[in-house]
Amino acid sequence: MSHVGSSLKYDTLQALGVGLVVLGGRGAVRQLVDHDSVGLLSRLPGRFAVGVGVYVVAVLVGAVVAGRAAGG
Image (tube, rainbow, N blue to C red; front, side):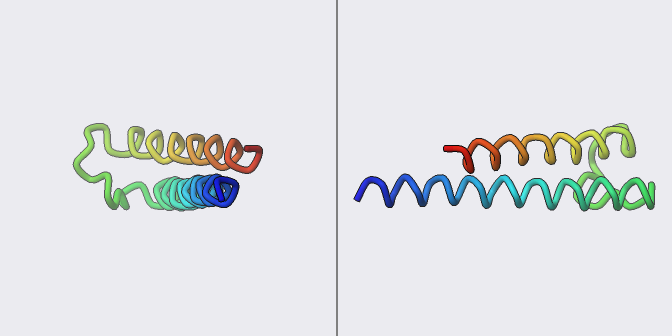
């Protein structure tokens, strides 16, 4: 029974990681193409540079989480 719960945990973490990769990648590309399209990050200071940085960090965190979950 514990193996099923563990598998579900890793599947959930992998889905979360992939979601972060997709959303971060989409946001970074959108902002690189249209600098004025800040979306959810409109309240951050530094607008463009900080926005792209946040999206890149989301991609990196998502890749690490998904990779660890897939290997776990």
